Length: 457
Image 1 (cartoon, rainbow, N blue to C red):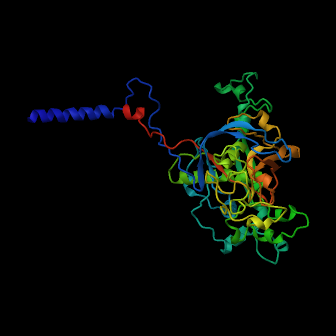
Image 2 (image 1 turned 90 degrees about the vertical axis):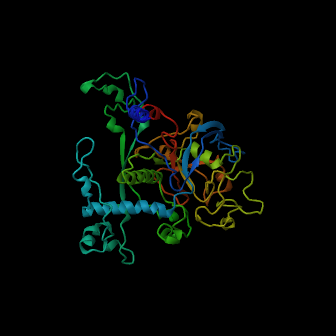
Protein backbone atom coordinates (compact mmCIF):
# COMPACT_ATOMS: atom_id res chain seq x y z
CA UNK A 1 0.00 0.00 0.00
CA UNK A 2 2.82 2.35 0.89
CA UNK A 3 4.55 1.63 -2.43
CA UNK A 4 1.37 2.35 -4.37
CA UNK A 5 1.02 5.74 -2.64
CA UNK A 6 4.62 6.63 -3.52
CA UNK A 7 4.03 5.67 -7.13
CA UNK A 8 0.93 7.91 -7.26
CA UNK A 9 2.85 10.81 -5.71
CA UNK A 10 5.69 10.50 -8.21
CA UNK A 11 3.16 10.17 -11.02
CA UNK A 12 1.47 13.47 -10.09
CA UNK A 13 4.85 15.18 -9.71
CA UNK A 14 5.81 14.04 -13.19
CA UNK A 15 2.50 15.34 -14.56
CA UNK A 16 3.16 18.70 -12.89
CA UNK A 17 6.58 19.02 -14.53
CA UNK A 18 5.17 18.03 -17.90
CA UNK A 19 2.30 20.51 -17.52
CA UNK A 20 4.69 23.32 -16.61
CA UNK A 21 6.96 22.71 -19.57
CA UNK A 22 7.22 25.78 -21.81
CA UNK A 23 7.94 23.79 -24.93
CA UNK A 24 5.61 24.36 -27.88
CA UNK A 25 6.28 20.74 -28.94
CA UNK A 26 7.09 21.91 -32.44
CA UNK A 27 3.70 23.51 -33.11
CA UNK A 28 3.05 27.13 -34.13
CA UNK A 29 1.16 28.53 -31.16
CA UNK A 30 2.00 32.21 -31.43
CA UNK A 31 4.19 34.40 -29.24
CA UNK A 32 3.56 33.62 -25.58
CA UNK A 33 3.81 35.80 -22.46
CA UNK A 34 2.00 38.67 -24.16
CA UNK A 35 0.54 41.18 -21.72
CA UNK A 36 -3.08 40.68 -20.80
CA UNK A 37 -5.06 43.54 -22.31
CA UNK A 38 -8.43 44.97 -21.41
CA UNK A 39 -10.36 47.90 -22.88
CA UNK A 40 -12.52 49.48 -20.19
CA UNK A 41 -15.48 51.71 -20.94
CA UNK A 42 -14.04 55.24 -21.06
CA UNK A 43 -15.50 57.50 -18.39
CA UNK A 44 -18.45 59.54 -19.68
CA UNK A 45 -18.70 57.57 -22.92
CA UNK A 46 -21.27 55.12 -24.26
CA UNK A 47 -20.73 52.10 -26.46
CA UNK A 48 -22.10 52.51 -30.00
CA UNK A 49 -22.47 49.16 -31.80
CA UNK A 50 -21.38 48.60 -35.36
CA UNK A 51 -23.92 48.54 -38.17
CA UNK A 52 -24.92 49.50 -41.69
CA UNK A 53 -27.44 52.21 -42.45
CA UNK A 54 -28.66 54.57 -45.14
CA UNK A 55 -26.55 57.67 -44.61
CA UNK A 56 -28.08 60.81 -46.02
CA UNK A 57 -31.46 62.36 -46.60
CA UNK A 58 -34.38 60.65 -44.84
CA UNK A 59 -36.90 63.42 -45.53
CA UNK A 60 -37.51 66.17 -48.05
CA UNK A 61 -34.44 68.23 -48.92
CA UNK A 62 -36.18 71.52 -48.08
CA UNK A 63 -33.50 73.94 -49.38
CA UNK A 64 -32.68 71.64 -52.33
CA UNK A 65 -29.02 71.73 -51.29
CA UNK A 66 -28.23 68.22 -52.62
CA UNK A 67 -25.50 67.89 -49.99
CA UNK A 68 -26.48 64.52 -48.53
CA UNK A 69 -27.44 61.89 -51.08
CA UNK A 70 -28.74 58.62 -49.66
CA UNK A 71 -25.97 56.02 -49.44
CA UNK A 72 -25.55 52.74 -47.58
CA UNK A 73 -22.47 52.81 -45.35
CA UNK A 74 -21.04 50.58 -42.63
CA UNK A 75 -19.34 51.76 -39.45
CA UNK A 76 -17.45 49.73 -36.88
CA UNK A 77 -18.07 49.92 -33.13
CA UNK A 78 -16.85 52.87 -31.10
CA UNK A 79 -17.39 54.80 -27.89
CA UNK A 80 -18.86 58.30 -27.91
CA UNK A 81 -19.18 61.01 -25.27
CA UNK A 82 -22.62 60.94 -23.70
CA UNK A 83 -22.82 64.74 -23.98
CA UNK A 84 -20.85 67.49 -25.65
CA UNK A 85 -17.58 68.43 -23.94
CA UNK A 86 -18.50 70.95 -21.24
CA UNK A 87 -16.87 74.20 -20.16
CA UNK A 88 -15.53 72.54 -17.02
CA UNK A 89 -14.04 69.58 -18.91
CA UNK A 90 -12.35 71.86 -21.42
CA UNK A 91 -11.16 74.08 -18.56
CA UNK A 92 -9.18 71.11 -17.23
CA UNK A 93 -7.28 71.14 -20.51
CA UNK A 94 -6.66 74.90 -20.27
CA UNK A 95 -5.45 74.63 -16.68
CA UNK A 96 -3.17 71.71 -17.57
CA UNK A 97 -1.53 73.80 -20.29
CA UNK A 98 -1.21 76.73 -17.86
CA UNK A 99 0.38 74.53 -15.17
CA UNK A 100 2.74 72.83 -17.62
CA UNK A 101 4.06 76.23 -18.75
CA UNK A 102 4.44 77.30 -15.12
CA UNK A 103 6.34 74.12 -14.22
CA UNK A 104 8.74 74.63 -17.11
CA UNK A 105 9.41 78.19 -15.93
CA UNK A 106 9.95 77.00 -12.34
CA UNK A 107 12.04 74.00 -13.41
CA UNK A 108 9.76 71.45 -11.74
CA UNK A 109 11.28 68.40 -13.42
CA UNK A 110 10.51 64.83 -12.39
CA UNK A 111 13.88 63.63 -11.07
CA UNK A 112 12.87 60.01 -11.68
CA UNK A 113 13.34 60.52 -15.40
CA UNK A 114 16.58 62.51 -15.13
CA UNK A 115 18.53 59.28 -14.60
CA UNK A 116 16.55 57.36 -17.22
CA UNK A 117 16.88 57.30 -20.98
CA UNK A 118 14.45 56.49 -23.75
CA UNK A 119 14.56 53.33 -25.88
CA UNK A 120 17.23 54.92 -28.10
CA UNK A 121 19.57 55.64 -25.18
CA UNK A 122 18.97 59.41 -25.22
CA UNK A 123 17.81 61.73 -22.45
CA UNK A 124 14.14 62.67 -22.46
CA UNK A 125 13.69 65.97 -24.27
CA UNK A 126 11.73 67.84 -23.13
CA UNK A 127 12.13 66.37 -19.63
CA UNK A 128 9.16 64.99 -17.72
CA UNK A 129 7.47 67.50 -15.42
CA UNK A 130 6.89 66.79 -11.75
CA UNK A 131 3.08 66.91 -11.46
CA UNK A 132 3.19 65.70 -7.84
CA UNK A 133 4.62 68.99 -6.64
CA UNK A 134 2.12 71.77 -6.02
CA UNK A 135 2.71 75.20 -7.53
CA UNK A 136 2.90 78.00 -4.93
CA UNK A 137 1.19 80.68 -6.99
CA UNK A 138 1.39 83.13 -4.05
CA UNK A 139 5.02 82.41 -3.13
CA UNK A 140 7.35 85.38 -3.48
CA UNK A 141 9.83 83.68 -5.79
CA UNK A 142 7.05 81.99 -7.74
CA UNK A 143 5.17 85.28 -8.23
CA UNK A 144 8.25 86.90 -9.70
CA UNK A 145 9.08 83.94 -11.96
CA UNK A 146 5.50 83.55 -13.19
CA UNK A 147 4.81 87.25 -13.72
CA UNK A 148 5.22 86.76 -17.49
CA UNK A 149 2.06 84.62 -17.52
CA UNK A 150 -0.07 87.59 -16.51
CA UNK A 151 -1.13 90.73 -18.34
CA UNK A 152 1.16 93.72 -17.84
CA UNK A 153 -0.27 96.56 -15.79
CA UNK A 154 -1.03 98.78 -18.78
CA UNK A 155 -3.15 95.97 -20.33
CA UNK A 156 -5.25 95.13 -17.27
CA UNK A 157 -8.98 95.79 -17.06
CA UNK A 158 -10.04 97.39 -13.76
CA UNK A 159 -6.45 96.85 -12.53
CA UNK A 160 -7.16 93.17 -11.93
CA UNK A 161 -4.36 90.62 -12.15
CA UNK A 162 -5.45 88.29 -14.94
CA UNK A 163 -3.85 85.41 -16.78
CA UNK A 164 -2.64 86.34 -20.26
CA UNK A 165 -4.51 83.71 -22.24
CA UNK A 166 -2.52 84.53 -25.39
CA UNK A 167 0.38 82.59 -23.85
CA UNK A 168 -1.52 79.36 -23.25
CA UNK A 169 -0.02 77.51 -26.20
CA UNK A 170 -0.07 73.73 -26.50
CA UNK A 171 2.52 71.86 -28.55
CA UNK A 172 1.37 68.52 -29.87
CA UNK A 173 2.12 65.87 -32.51
CA UNK A 174 0.15 63.42 -34.59
CA UNK A 175 0.93 60.91 -37.35
CA UNK A 176 -0.32 61.56 -40.87
CA UNK A 177 -1.11 57.99 -41.89
CA UNK A 178 -2.79 59.09 -45.11
CA UNK A 179 0.41 60.69 -46.39
CA UNK A 180 2.54 57.78 -45.17
CA UNK A 181 0.38 55.29 -47.07
CA UNK A 182 1.03 56.94 -50.45
CA UNK A 183 4.24 55.10 -51.39
CA UNK A 184 6.04 55.56 -54.69
CA UNK A 185 7.49 52.15 -55.61
CA UNK A 186 8.80 53.53 -58.92
CA UNK A 187 11.35 55.67 -57.14
CA UNK A 188 15.03 54.60 -57.47
CA UNK A 189 16.15 52.17 -54.80
CA UNK A 190 18.30 53.46 -51.98
CA UNK A 191 19.36 50.56 -49.80
CA UNK A 192 21.82 52.32 -47.55
CA UNK A 193 22.01 50.71 -44.14
CA UNK A 194 20.04 47.77 -45.53
CA UNK A 195 16.80 49.78 -45.73
CA UNK A 196 14.76 50.23 -48.87
CA UNK A 197 14.09 53.97 -48.44
CA UNK A 198 12.21 54.13 -51.73
CA UNK A 199 9.24 52.52 -49.97
CA UNK A 200 9.12 55.56 -47.70
CA UNK A 201 8.77 57.99 -50.56
CA UNK A 202 5.51 59.89 -50.57
CA UNK A 203 4.18 60.36 -54.09
CA UNK A 204 3.12 64.03 -53.99
CA UNK A 205 5.75 65.33 -51.55
CA UNK A 206 8.71 63.10 -52.37
CA UNK A 207 9.60 62.46 -48.73
CA UNK A 208 12.36 59.91 -48.04
CA UNK A 209 12.31 59.87 -44.24
CA UNK A 210 9.26 58.61 -42.41
CA UNK A 211 9.80 61.12 -39.60
CA UNK A 212 8.20 63.71 -41.88
CA UNK A 213 4.87 62.00 -41.30
CA UNK A 214 5.01 63.04 -37.64
CA UNK A 215 3.21 66.36 -37.77
CA UNK A 216 3.72 69.06 -35.17
CA UNK A 217 1.51 71.99 -34.31
CA UNK A 218 1.38 74.70 -31.67
CA UNK A 219 -2.00 76.20 -30.91
CA UNK A 220 -3.50 78.54 -28.37
CA UNK A 221 -6.03 76.55 -26.37
CA UNK A 222 -8.17 79.29 -24.82
CA UNK A 223 -11.67 79.52 -26.36
CA UNK A 224 -12.62 82.61 -28.34
CA UNK A 225 -14.85 84.27 -25.72
CA UNK A 226 -15.48 87.22 -28.06
CA UNK A 227 -17.36 84.94 -30.47
CA UNK A 228 -20.57 86.01 -28.73
CA UNK A 229 -20.02 89.53 -30.07
CA UNK A 230 -18.60 88.97 -33.54
CA UNK A 231 -21.06 86.18 -34.46
CA UNK A 232 -24.03 88.56 -34.34
CA UNK A 233 -24.48 91.97 -35.90
CA UNK A 234 -25.87 94.68 -33.60
CA UNK A 235 -26.74 92.29 -30.77
CA UNK A 236 -25.94 92.80 -27.09
CA UNK A 237 -24.17 89.60 -25.98
CA UNK A 238 -21.40 91.09 -23.85
CA UNK A 239 -22.62 89.35 -20.63
CA UNK A 240 -22.07 85.98 -22.33
CA UNK A 241 -18.60 87.08 -23.44
CA UNK A 242 -17.64 87.91 -19.87
CA UNK A 243 -19.20 84.93 -18.10
CA UNK A 244 -19.94 81.91 -20.28
CA UNK A 245 -16.57 80.15 -20.07
CA UNK A 246 -15.32 81.57 -16.76
CA UNK A 247 -18.35 81.61 -14.44
CA UNK A 248 -19.14 78.44 -12.44
CA UNK A 249 -22.83 78.83 -13.32
CA UNK A 250 -21.96 77.61 -16.83
CA UNK A 251 -19.63 74.75 -15.84
CA UNK A 252 -21.89 72.06 -17.26
CA UNK A 253 -22.84 73.91 -20.41
CA UNK A 254 -21.25 72.87 -23.74
CA UNK A 255 -17.98 74.64 -24.49
CA UNK A 256 -18.16 76.97 -27.50
CA UNK A 257 -15.73 79.32 -29.22
CA UNK A 258 -13.44 76.33 -29.82
CA UNK A 259 -12.05 75.93 -33.33
CA UNK A 260 -11.69 72.59 -35.10
CA UNK A 261 -7.94 72.65 -34.50
CA UNK A 262 -8.45 73.34 -30.79
CA UNK A 263 -10.93 70.45 -30.60
CA UNK A 264 -8.36 68.14 -32.19
CA UNK A 265 -5.67 69.37 -29.78
CA UNK A 266 -8.00 68.61 -26.85
CA UNK A 267 -8.55 65.08 -28.21
CA UNK A 268 -4.79 64.45 -28.45
CA UNK A 269 -4.21 65.88 -24.97
CA UNK A 270 -7.01 63.71 -23.57
CA UNK A 271 -5.29 60.63 -25.01
CA UNK A 272 -1.87 61.61 -23.66
CA UNK A 273 -3.33 62.53 -20.28
CA UNK A 274 -4.82 59.05 -19.79
CA UNK A 275 -1.72 57.31 -21.14
CA UNK A 276 0.47 59.24 -18.68
CA UNK A 277 -1.69 58.01 -15.80
CA UNK A 278 -1.56 54.40 -17.01
CA UNK A 279 2.20 54.58 -17.40
CA UNK A 280 2.72 56.09 -13.94
CA UNK A 281 0.67 53.25 -12.43
CA UNK A 282 2.59 50.59 -14.36
CA UNK A 283 -0.45 49.86 -16.52
CA UNK A 284 1.58 50.00 -19.70
CA UNK A 285 -1.17 49.23 -22.22
CA UNK A 286 -1.70 52.31 -24.36
CA UNK A 287 -5.32 53.36 -24.81
CA UNK A 288 -6.88 53.84 -28.19
CA UNK A 289 -6.84 57.47 -29.27
CA UNK A 290 -9.61 59.89 -28.44
CA UNK A 291 -10.56 61.81 -31.57
CA UNK A 292 -13.31 63.73 -33.32
CA UNK A 293 -16.03 61.53 -34.84
CA UNK A 294 -16.15 60.95 -38.56
CA UNK A 295 -19.25 62.23 -40.29
CA UNK A 296 -20.54 58.69 -40.85
CA UNK A 297 -19.96 57.78 -37.18
CA UNK A 298 -21.73 60.92 -36.00
CA UNK A 299 -24.83 60.29 -38.13
CA UNK A 300 -25.00 56.61 -37.15
CA UNK A 301 -24.79 57.56 -33.48
CA UNK A 302 -27.34 60.37 -33.87
CA UNK A 303 -29.87 58.03 -35.48
CA UNK A 304 -29.77 55.77 -32.42
CA UNK A 305 -30.53 52.69 -34.49
CA UNK A 306 -33.58 54.26 -36.18
CA UNK A 307 -32.52 53.99 -39.80
CA UNK A 308 -35.04 56.16 -41.64
CA UNK A 309 -36.07 58.62 -38.92
CA UNK A 310 -35.28 62.28 -39.62
CA UNK A 311 -34.48 63.30 -36.01
CA UNK A 312 -32.43 61.75 -33.18
CA UNK A 313 -35.63 60.98 -31.23
CA UNK A 314 -37.37 59.49 -34.27
CA UNK A 315 -39.88 61.59 -36.10
CA UNK A 316 -41.44 63.02 -38.05
CA UNK A 317 -42.33 65.69 -35.47
CA UNK A 318 -40.18 68.13 -33.53
CA UNK A 319 -42.52 68.20 -30.49
CA UNK A 320 -43.74 65.45 -28.22
CA UNK A 321 -47.37 64.51 -27.57
CA UNK A 322 -47.64 67.27 -24.95
CA UNK A 323 -46.54 69.92 -27.43
CA UNK A 324 -43.10 70.39 -25.84
CA UNK A 325 -40.05 70.87 -28.03
CA UNK A 326 -37.54 68.00 -28.05
CA UNK A 327 -34.38 70.06 -28.52
CA UNK A 328 -32.87 73.51 -28.08
CA UNK A 329 -33.04 75.33 -31.40
CA UNK A 330 -34.75 78.34 -33.04
CA UNK A 331 -38.43 77.36 -33.08
CA UNK A 332 -41.35 78.92 -34.87
CA UNK A 333 -40.43 82.33 -36.32
CA UNK A 334 -37.67 83.07 -33.86
CA UNK A 335 -39.14 82.51 -30.40
CA UNK A 336 -35.83 81.31 -28.93
CA UNK A 337 -37.29 80.90 -25.44
CA UNK A 338 -40.19 78.65 -26.41
CA UNK A 339 -38.04 75.48 -26.29
CA UNK A 340 -36.67 76.28 -22.83
CA UNK A 341 -33.44 78.15 -23.60
CA UNK A 342 -32.41 81.40 -25.27
CA UNK A 343 -28.73 80.46 -25.51
CA UNK A 344 -27.10 77.04 -25.04
CA UNK A 345 -28.43 75.22 -22.01
CA UNK A 346 -26.98 72.67 -19.61
CA UNK A 347 -26.02 69.38 -21.30
CA UNK A 348 -28.37 66.43 -20.89
CA UNK A 349 -31.48 68.57 -20.38
CA UNK A 350 -33.59 66.86 -23.06
CA UNK A 351 -34.23 63.13 -23.36
CA UNK A 352 -31.45 61.05 -25.00
CA UNK A 353 -31.80 59.07 -28.20
CA UNK A 354 -32.02 55.26 -28.23
CA UNK A 355 -28.22 54.93 -27.87
CA UNK A 356 -28.36 57.10 -24.73
CA UNK A 357 -26.68 60.13 -26.32
CA UNK A 358 -27.86 63.61 -25.36
CA UNK A 359 -28.21 66.71 -27.54
CA UNK A 360 -27.51 65.06 -30.88
CA UNK A 361 -29.98 67.60 -32.26
CA UNK A 362 -29.79 71.22 -31.10
CA UNK A 363 -28.02 73.00 -28.23
CA UNK A 364 -24.72 73.34 -30.10
CA UNK A 365 -23.61 71.98 -33.46
CA UNK A 366 -20.61 69.65 -33.33
CA UNK A 367 -17.31 69.43 -35.19
CA UNK A 368 -16.66 66.28 -37.19
CA UNK A 369 -13.31 65.03 -38.41
CA UNK A 370 -14.23 65.34 -42.09
CA UNK A 371 -13.29 68.15 -44.42
CA UNK A 372 -16.40 69.54 -46.10
CA UNK A 373 -16.93 68.69 -49.73
CA UNK A 374 -20.43 68.82 -51.29
CA UNK A 375 -19.60 65.74 -53.38
CA UNK A 376 -17.79 63.62 -50.78
CA UNK A 377 -20.63 61.08 -50.63
CA UNK A 378 -19.96 60.26 -54.28
CA UNK A 379 -16.30 59.28 -53.97
CA UNK A 380 -15.75 58.35 -50.30
CA UNK A 381 -15.61 54.65 -49.41
CA UNK A 382 -18.76 53.06 -47.99
CA UNK A 383 -16.89 51.44 -45.06
CA UNK A 384 -16.15 53.87 -42.22
CA UNK A 385 -16.62 56.75 -44.64
CA UNK A 386 -14.44 59.79 -43.94
CA UNK A 387 -13.09 62.55 -46.16
CA UNK A 388 -9.76 63.71 -44.72
CA UNK A 389 -7.83 66.75 -45.82
CA UNK A 390 -5.16 68.47 -43.73
CA UNK A 391 -5.52 72.10 -44.76
CA UNK A 392 -2.44 74.30 -44.69
CA UNK A 393 -2.34 77.96 -43.70
CA UNK A 394 -1.62 78.83 -47.32
CA UNK A 395 -4.71 76.99 -48.62
CA UNK A 396 -7.72 79.00 -49.79
CA UNK A 397 -10.65 79.26 -47.34
CA UNK A 398 -12.69 76.69 -49.28
CA UNK A 399 -10.09 74.05 -48.36
CA UNK A 400 -10.33 74.88 -44.64
CA UNK A 401 -13.99 73.95 -44.31
CA UNK A 402 -14.84 71.23 -41.78
CA UNK A 403 -18.16 69.47 -41.35
CA UNK A 404 -20.45 70.41 -38.46
CA UNK A 405 -23.53 68.38 -37.58
CA UNK A 406 -26.56 68.47 -35.31
CA UNK A 407 -27.77 72.07 -35.47
CA UNK A 408 -27.62 74.55 -32.60
CA UNK A 409 -29.61 76.88 -30.39
CA UNK A 410 -29.65 79.51 -33.17
CA UNK A 411 -30.57 77.20 -36.07
CA UNK A 412 -33.98 76.34 -37.48
CA UNK A 413 -35.43 72.86 -37.19
CA UNK A 414 -34.07 71.67 -40.55
CA UNK A 415 -30.52 71.59 -39.15
CA UNK A 416 -31.60 69.32 -36.29
CA UNK A 417 -32.20 66.50 -38.76
CA UNK A 418 -29.61 63.73 -38.52
CA UNK A 419 -28.83 64.01 -42.24
CA UNK A 420 -28.36 67.80 -42.39
CA UNK A 421 -24.77 68.86 -42.93
CA UNK A 422 -23.02 72.19 -43.18
CA UNK A 423 -19.56 73.59 -42.40
CA UNK A 424 -17.46 76.12 -40.55
CA UNK A 425 -13.81 77.04 -41.05
CA UNK A 426 -11.26 75.02 -39.08
CA UNK A 427 -9.49 78.03 -37.57
CA UNK A 428 -12.60 79.86 -36.30
CA UNK A 429 -14.56 79.40 -33.09
CA UNK A 430 -18.28 80.03 -33.02
CA UNK A 431 -20.77 80.59 -30.21
CA UNK A 432 -22.94 77.81 -31.60
CA UNK A 433 -20.34 75.08 -32.32
CA UNK A 434 -18.94 72.62 -29.78
CA UNK A 435 -17.73 69.02 -30.03
CA UNK A 436 -17.59 65.59 -28.47
CA UNK A 437 -15.01 62.80 -28.67
CA UNK A 438 -15.11 59.18 -29.77
CA UNK A 439 -12.77 56.25 -29.22
CA UNK A 440 -12.53 53.23 -31.52
CA UNK A 441 -13.55 49.90 -30.01
CA UNK A 442 -10.90 47.17 -30.10
CA UNK A 443 -12.48 44.44 -27.99
CA UNK A 444 -12.85 43.60 -24.35
CA UNK A 445 -10.02 41.38 -23.19
CA UNK A 446 -7.39 39.21 -24.77
CA UNK A 447 -7.49 35.59 -23.64
CA UNK A 448 -11.12 35.35 -22.55
CA UNK A 449 -11.52 31.88 -24.03
CA UNK A 450 -9.20 28.87 -24.19
CA UNK A 451 -5.98 29.65 -26.05
CA UNK A 452 -2.88 27.75 -26.99
CA UNK A 453 -1.13 29.14 -23.92
CA UNK A 454 -3.60 27.18 -21.77
CA UNK A 455 -2.82 23.99 -23.67
CA UNK A 456 0.93 24.15 -24.29
CA UNK A 457 2.84 25.13 -21.19
